[in-house]
Amino acid sequence: MASSVKRQKAQGTVLRPVHPNQGIEAEYRRRLVAMIQEMDRSIAYWLKAAYRKNAPELAQDELPVETLRRAIRALTRRWTARFNDLSADLASYFAQSVSQRSDAALKAALKRGGFSVEWTMTRSQRDVVNSVVHENVSLIKSIAQQHLGKVEGAVMRSVATGRDLGTLTKELQEISGVTKRRAAFIATSQNNLATASLTAARQREIGVTEAVWVHSGGGKHPRKSHLKAGLDRQTYDPAKGWLDPEVGKYILPGQLPNCRCVSRAVVPGFN
Image (tube, rainbow, N blue to C red):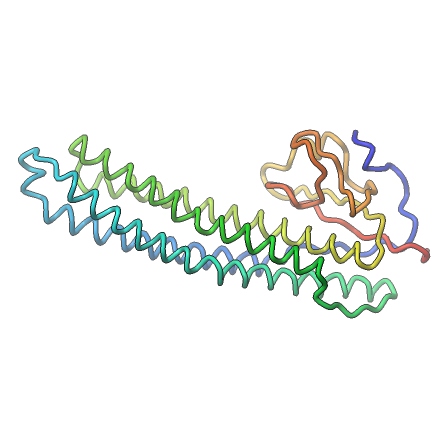
C-alpha cells in the first residue's frame, strides 16, 4: 500500500463528505442525450432522402458512393459545428453548477462541525473551474466527432455491400446506443471528478491537511486498485492525494473513471 494513505485515527473534527450532486449529473446527461437524439433524427432524415433519390442506381448495382459521401460529410460539418457551439455553454454551465453545489455542501458540513466560512472565487478555484470547462468542451466535441465517424463508416459499408436502408438504420441505432452510453459515462465521471477537484481545492484553502478516504461500493465496476489497497476510512493529505499504482500518479477520491469514492475533511483542534 502506498505510504500516502495512513492507517490511523483522524485527529480532529471529521466533517461529512461532499457527494457529487445527482441532479447536476442528470441534467448534464439529459442535455447531451437530447443533442444526440436531434443529431440522429437529422442523419436519419437526410440519409433516407439520399437513399430514395438514388434508389434506381441502387437497384441497378450502380453504387452512388459520391452522392452519399457528400450527404454524410455535409451532415458531419453541420453537426460538428452544432456540438462545437454547444460545448462552451454546456461545459460552463456544468462547471459553475458543480462549483456552487460543492461550495454549498462543504459550507454546510463545516457549519455542522461548528465552523463558519464565506466563500469567494479564489484563483485556485478559478483555475479548477477553467480546467473543468476546458476538459468538458473537448469531451462534448468528441461526442459528435466519434459518432459521425462511425456513421460515415456504416454508410460506406452499406453502399459497398448493397445493404438496404432498413439494415443501415438498425446499425445506426446501435451506434446511437453506444454514443448515448458514452454521454452518460461522461456525465457521471466528470461530475465525480469536478466535485473531487473543487472540494479538495477548498479544503486546502481553509488549511485542511488531513482527510478520510471513504470508499463507495456504488457502480458495477469499482476500481480494483482502490479495493486492493483498502483505502476505506484511511487518512491522506488532500494536497497530495494517494499514489495509485494502476495509473502511476497521485489521485483524489472520485477523480478517476469508475471511482465514486468521496472524502471527509478533518479539521484539527476540535475533538
